[in-house]
Image (cartoon, rainbow, N blue to C red):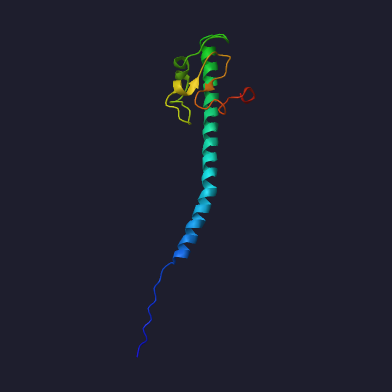
Length: 123
């Protein structure tokens, strides 16, 4: 005579809830760090673009024999830049991402001007 035993395999509701809670805890730790890393990367890329733009302005001024108070436009600088330079924090074009005034003034970021700053000591 055979004895019948019915055995159901699988996870209980409590086990599934514990796994979901652990995944939620890990996500709550990882997501803010991911956002902070992305923001820092965008800031560093924008500052790098500002350095390239400043170098292009200085090169334009030297080649065209412009003084330090000469007004610079994006059309003057774009031939000295490689590719489409725009702010990684949401810029759609060079003109809506960066501001140029004169040769002696550093270029500015129009998207996030508080943190995307080309410091005079970094040049």
